[in-house]
Amino acid sequence: MFRPIPETTFFRAVPYRLVASLLLVLALIASVILLFSLERKKLLLRGFTEGENASTQLFHALWQSRGDLIIETLLVFLVSSIGIAAVITFLHYDTARKTLEEVKGLARNILQSIPTGVLTINQGGIISAMNPAAEAVLNRASSELLGIGYDAVFSEKDPIRRILDGALKEHSHVNQKDFVYECGSLSPRTIRVSTAELTGDDKKPAGVILQAQDVSEWLGLERRVHVAEKLAALHTLSAGVAHELRNPLSAMDLNLHLLEEELQERRALTEPGARYLGVVNAECRRLSGILDNFMKFARPGPVALHEVDVRTLIDHIMTLMRFEAEERGIRLERVMDEQILPVLGDATQISQVLVNIIVNAFHAMPNGGLCRISAAQRKADEKHWIEITVKDSGVGITTEQLSHLFEPFYTTKASGTGLGLAIAYRIMQDHSGTIQVVSAPGSGTTVVTQFPVALGQPQKVSVGS
Image (cartoon, rainbow, N blue to C red; front, side, top):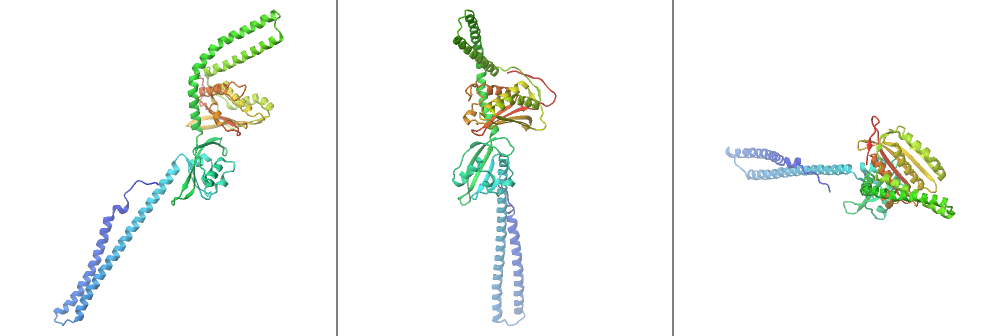
């Protein structure tokens, strides 16, 4: 499956020198044998030259000597051939072993380097391999998981446990399935998981491969780009529409007051008529408030950026919202790091964002619950951020609703205008911050806002839209 870059092996580099050396040794041995044989023949022939009578045994000995020489030569060639074959076999084995180690090393390096988390489980349900990316996604060390059954690692409610159960027991695999995953102290993240069948060399099932990737940032960026594209087209249009509606609305409001005064002067204002006029006046004021928010969304005022103490800001918001939380039966908690650096922004607008998020959290818990506000320091992309998170235990938000959450006039509340989160999104843009929402039906909602840390001296910068 993995093939390393071909390299010149030791055997390929020196076969000719090796064979030549063996042949020289063989020739040397054969020469020694021939010399001994020649000396033996010289002794026999010397008897002829001295006038001695040669017997038939002498000729038989000569033929026997030649036969022995042939046998000895064959034995030498046979032993030498076996030796050469053994050396060649050893070199082939050594080359194959080195190639196998290179393949193993390459596969190991690939597995360690890929950014996608890979987890392998054998047929017995034992976790057999895990790369560093999987450790980061699952927030677990490989030393704690390898050699242990997945059913002992992941609880029954864990979505990864259910996916692995389906893959191993029912051969039901998933492809790029997204779900909210909570593990340890990390905030909820969106995990994308795929499974595939692992086959052995005999082409039979040998287990399951699970691929996991944290796509929270990618999905958040995709949603922000999608929302930004929609909002860019609405900014100019909304400003013009709000301006055109405000003029006739002001005229209607003025004439309603004049009509009410005229009827009161003539004593012609009946009780039902006064009630009708009150409804119209109330709706005019409500429409005026909507237009005000619309104008804030379309043309927000300049932002005076300065250092904002996060701890003081959150304490103020907690005091502001505590009474409403008690009325709704909601427990309001605060969790903060010991040291929180100030952020760069406008305290009033940041408060507007956080209050809007907390109010939405309260509405998501009609029967009471827990709303936790936490602040912590983070570092990402060589930048320092203060992350303020609002987490509730409410009814949650569907995936379809999440995709429209920051769009103007989109709301799930009967009395909502749908501009609160759209304005909050625009304020976060003006502060060079980010806002992300993670939720699932029945699992509550987590809203994460990030503000840049104010490093250095306080500064005031006017940001126009």
